[in-house]
Structures are given as C-alpha cells and as structure tokens.
Length: 310
Length: 241
Image (cartoon, rainbow over all chains, first blue to last red; front, side):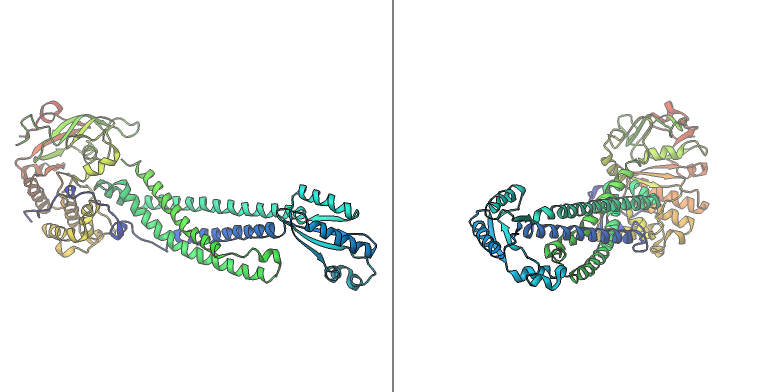
C-alpha cells in the first residue's frame, strides 16, 4: 500500500469520446418504468393518425381533381323527343371537334332512367316524365369558368335551352373543405411535434435534476459538455425508439382498422383515400422524426443547463 | 525544494483572486499564491474560513469574481469553456464528502476518470485492479458505496482521484471521516504520490497531520484571506515552524 501503481497519466492518452453502454451506465436506468416511452408512444400514434388522415385526404383531393374536375355534363332539355335527340347528336359532334375536349359520351336513355329511378320510380322509364338527353364531357384540362363559358356559347347556338354543369363548380367547395382538413392535420402534426419536444425537454430537465450530483462529478473529472450530453441523448433515444415503435404499431393498426371500415362504405370518393405504399413509407418515417426531435431537444436542454455549471 | 527558486512560474498561480456568491460579501479576498510542482501543501483554517471555496477555484468548479488564475501555463479564467475539461483531467480531487456515484461499484467509481478520458475497457482493467489493491479494497471491487464503511469510501475516493495520475491532487478534509490510524495511512498514500511528482494540496483543520509530513508547506486561511499573503504565500511558501 506504500507505493501506488504506475499508471500513465490519463491526460496524455488523448481525449477519445466517452460513449456507449459504459457511459450510459452513469444514469441509473428506469427505462420503460418512467413516463417517457409511453408519452412518445402516444405522441407518435397520434402523429401517425394525423399523418394518415392528411395523406388520405390528399389522395381524395388528387383523385377528385383528376377525375371529376375536368368533367362536365350537358343537358338537352327540349320537350320534343326527336328534336332533343337530334340536338344531342349535333352537340356531341360539335364537342368532339373542340381541342380542349378529350371525351364525349351521350348517356343512353336507359342509363338516365336508372339514375333517376330512386327519385322518380318506374315513371322514369316510360314517357310519363320527359327525360333530358345527357352528354358526359371530359375536358383535356380542369374545367375553369372561361372554358365552360366558351362551350356554353357554342352549345346554345345548337340547342338554345341546353344546360352545361361543370363538376368543378360543385367540387370546388368540397376540395376547399378537404384542403382545410388536410392543413388542420398538418397543423396537428406540428403541434404534436412541439408537444413531444416539450415532453422531452421536461424529461431531460427532470433527469438532469435527479442526476445533478453525478453529472457534476463527471464534469469535475474532466467530462466535457458534449460527453455528458451524449449520455442523456443515448438514454432519451432508447426511450424514444421504444415509444416510437409502439406508437407506429398502434397508429398503423388504427389506420388499417379505419381503412377497412371506410372501404366497406363502397363510396367512390372515400375509397380513393386509401394509402399507397409510399404513404405507408412516409408514415414509417414519422417515428424517426420523433426520435430525431427527442435527441436534438435532449442535447440542447442538457447543453444549455450545463453552461450554467462552470 | 525544486521549483521554488523564483524562476519557476509554478504549476498554479493565483493573483489577487476574490470570490463572492451572488451579492453576498466576498468569501475569499485578495488571494495570491503560487504552487510549485512536486510540493506537498497543507491548507488550514477554521471552519468557514473559505478552504472549500478556495479548493473549488483550484479544481475549476468555480470561476472567481475577480483576479487571475494561471494553471499549467494557461490563464484558465480567459480560457474557452470547451478547453476546461482538459485542465480538469490534470487535477485529481478528493471531495470532503467523497462524492462517489451511488449506483456504481467501487471498481466503476475508480474507473470513471479513465473512461471519461477515453481509455478502453481492456486498457483500464489492470490499472483499476492495481489501484483497488493499492488502497486495500481488492475484495470489495463490486461493492456499492452504500455498503462500504466511511474509511473504505474515502479510499475509493482517493483511488478515483489519483488513478489518472493527475499533476495536482487536491483533497478536502480527507481524514475528516476516518480514525487516526486510517488518517495516517491516507497521508502515507498522498506522500507516495507526491514522491512520484504529483503536487499535493490537502485542506485540513487537523494540525496533527502536518507533523506527519515533515517536508510539507503550509497555507493558512483566516476569514477568507491568506494569513500572510505577502511573505509566505505570494513567494515560495515556507514551512510553519
């Protein structure tokens, strides 16, 4: 005990990073017993749900805009059946010659009758109620007001009592509502991101508080701020990854369940809101973003607290 | 007494250092002294004289309110914050209340400075084991601080302070919690390190200890001031008769 062992001064060994499991052991672990993984799981699950909703609404809007916004319906309302048929043929011929019209289809009389049957009953199939002649038109681009006005002018030259209804006219408020919902979902994701960062900030400050003595010792033994921050980052990252995976599983399960229920509605517009492989890949990235936010927040919190110690 | 010929700049130099906490009056005033390499110093003074505050300045746990501190030929007050860990690694500290990490074993507590310095697990196993053996705790390597006696904790704290072979060893009342026999053993450990070239500064109010180290030098604090700031301490300190 008289002569101390000969040990090379640590200061001459170089300053390799203090990291890994040994560094992490500085903080007594209460992993999974503490609230952090559960908070992250809930945040990520809600974010996945909001993200799924945003992507789904985006798909609905894209489909509606692509399929419906360029569509228009022409009604030939002449009371005389023969004149109505002749006018429909003439209008269809004229429309096919237009450069901004890509498709024209005269809707068969039986199909019109079938469409009206829920409202008119069997009367729609006979000659009791005069049915208009319908022409479905698909424009080569979105049916804006000027395109519809130009077509209307040409149609009324042939059939003065014809009416043209652009789908975009009734679709616009629907698309505006979808857009609002989509932005609300994006806002919700951002709020959840801030909330997750705030939760990590609180957790990191709490961990700093209860481990302050240990950290001061490491500091006085020559531990740098970056080394100490790394210990906390690792701890928070493990919690965030555990919470993120759990949250993703929960969120994905909820989305799948909802998708099944909506698809059972068999509504064209809603079924267009299904998530693609790319959408699922984007949703799978959300936990990674949550982990990145958690690690960055923990680092900044710890560094800023350590600066108050010498 | 090498390094005390007036030409050596000293390993530590305090120049007119003052320290106050918040808006309170200064706990240390006009502190000026030089520590020379390889010397053994005692810092004495009554309780509340400012010994611990002075030591905190020495092991860079605190910045002074005024004055200048040079260590290892560097102005540590002006040094960028990120350079301070490298200075701290050259200073070993035995804290008054040990300050061991409760959830780490004796082995892990002693290994901590080496791990912080980036020594690999393979490389640190032998020195840590040797150090445990040196302080007589080879059989208690896996014990946590709570299961160690006061004397054993003190020895773990000393082993942790010296394992990285610091150039300066600072000990705050290292014998305050041990019996007289253990106190002598601890002082022998410090002397052994001192013989290897480590500058040792021990803060104590136990004047009996001074007699155990015949070649030691004395600094005395009284109400936050060194008792003889111009004669004994600014210049090479001399032994108290």
